[in-house]
Length: 622
Image (cartoon, rainbow, N blue to C red; front, side, top):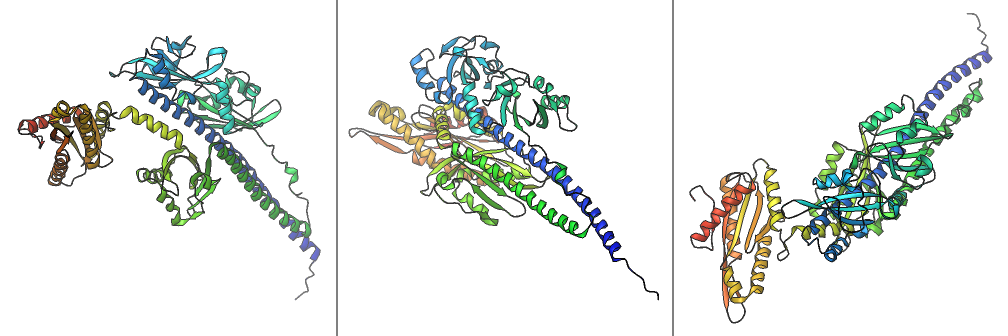
């Protein structure tokens, strides 16, 4: 066998050449992925910030519309001609707006200092006259020539007719300050566009970017250069017309910008979130492909490792920057940010001053311990767990809910939770990121206003108008195999209490009846006063058969009669009272409120006619 002389130098060059080719191929593929990932991160951050801003602005107007509607309910019961009373009622909500006025349906000012010029042409005013609260789709000129955005809510009388409209407004400076508190910076601009494509209001630097309010956003973009591949001005216009979210890049005045347009629920408008774009790194920073020896190959390997480390560090810095942005919002609104990792293992982390918000420390929860958070949630709000799982299975863009959480002393406070899903590239859920804000004062005020509008002043149970509408709504949303039991209760010998002992004792008898009825029935039952000494109770019961249903109905009816066998005395005279009860059941005796009311009333009449102090279940023989 001949000796084969191997040229070691040539073998080394061959190995180096192959290594260089492989490294170039790896580098090319790697940096393409890095470039694509950087673009996705940039887009994700931009869209995340835009959605947070959109959510806050929507929450602002939703809460203000709710407050204005509650105020409209309160005003509907007062004498509109008495400016002093109207002013007193409006004062409860004045701090939420820059101005609140009252006008009639012809646009004539009744109370306040609203500029009513051309107010009847406003689309929001027309919606309110038609019975629907609405926000104007354009800025109006208020007093002192200030620009303002108006919110309208109808005021209904007891017959549900509309004769007046509440007009509340925000000055453009107020809206600008609110947006600045949400997210601000010299390198970004936030604006709100109406359904006609015109910029209405935004952050303080809005005029520097777009010009004065009222400018066409599409006209502005036509003067810019769209740089996103495959996207032109026609594509942007089409997405806006379809109320779709869109992300794009463009150049203006020698600067690069990225913009996200997010549709908002009110007025068919858009949030425009624009920020300056970071320039891409030059390809010259990649190692030269002329390295033809082993040392350069090894150096290239080290450089690859270094670049991977840099890649993860940059991503970490981006995450820290986002958390810093969240912390700014937390300090402004007494809130925390939480990160709920769903896959691959459940984990909850919080960022912010948790102890200041809830009065207790928080330790990161992992696995099944995640569910321990529900231990401090009010039992009436426990349904949030099911709503969250439903949201995880079919995620919308945003989640929002209000819950009560106990502090270390066991006192419950209201909090508002908002959040959004962050998905993998293939759509698999990774985590749920959100914020918890202390909203106890605002929500408690709203609940109190609602209770004052819906409850009977003497007894605290639902008033006639409210209980009738709620019962009608419950029966309308019929559930299979569910019965709706309707009790009508009338006091026997009540007139003698007033005539013999006086109205103070009569009011006491009425209040006691409401109290005992509320104790007999669970919190989900509807208890109301129809007027005088007449009450109504409606509850739903899932029975396996009519025998168990009848047993349940009779048990409750006997309890009603028992608690209403009472006597009242002023020391000189004593009056005994009892109660007569009429009962109807849906769907057996009817499938709407009117039918159940009529048949329970017939059964009540039978109880009165046949001796009182008893109950009667409706039957056809009556």
